[in-house]
Image 1 (cartoon, rainbow, N blue to C red):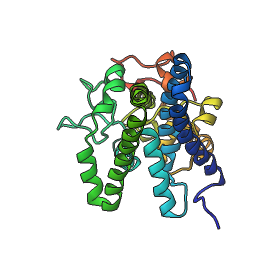
Image 2: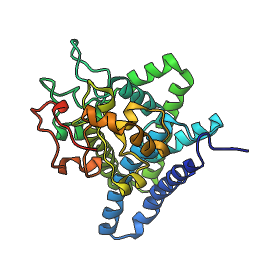
Image 3: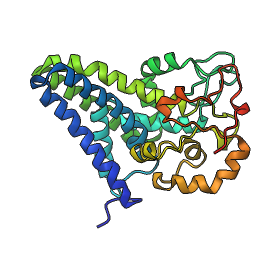
Length: 295
């Protein structure tokens, strides 16, 4: 019986997601017996792993669910939610709206289609300052609104999203009863992990062109980065063809390379989360479409 829906290589992110959940459980078990300085390092690794999961495993799962059998996809969605402290179902809606707007600039009504657009809280059609985007975006989601939108389309998914959040909160309550000090340790690394995810998202679009479909996203082609992050670096390609499986992103890049060059697709050398280190980033007063970097 075939379990995976699209590719045998989807077993890799599935195993990694299970390992990620195991890592979180290990943090709790190690906490009472491990020196603080080691726990701080392990906590920072957990923060990075949240961004790694959201932008790699969880993200690819949205576009191409890993399993043929729907109950397995819901079970996997639940596992991701409890591991990272959010609702995968809610993330699914937000991310699909992100692809509808593609980090668009505000319209005449002052709002964007994309709820996480880097332009949404900016001024004068400029991207928002990265500091506020990274550290405030976590608080900007409206769970009630997200729930209502999902409920109109897929009521079961909306309530399953509530179950995901309730499950995570229940785990936190149980953990807090067993060792309240662990919650104090966990909370800042949990928050920082989601901030790192927004940092990654910021530079996946900073320098992109909201008015040119093939250049909506910003790409980074480092081999190690893409191997570890499940081809998260091919972001211009992904926004151009969102349903292409993560294992086929390099092939897509080769197919549209010339079109990308003509459109001035923005490419950075470091991984997206380190995009601020790239020497070719446009200045904040400069229109993204004026920046053309060879692919």
